[in-house]
Image (cartoon, one colour):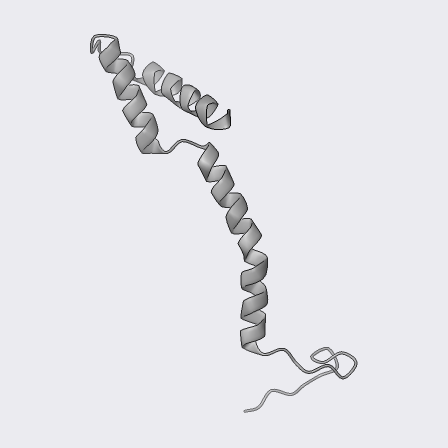
Length: 85
């Protein structure tokens, strides 16, 4: 069944947009959001980076148990400072 065109479909005699045009416009407007998300991701350390830095801190303390949470928080803080600056 064919779609009925209404006044809102075509304003002032303009041709209706095709699906391909709508997809291109959607992709074009989505690009800046993707770039912004990548910028935010670049500033935040990954879980793996934090784990590795926390493990290095653990080893540098002589592999003393019981301070894993402190090592994690300190490693995360240091990595965030490095990526921000």
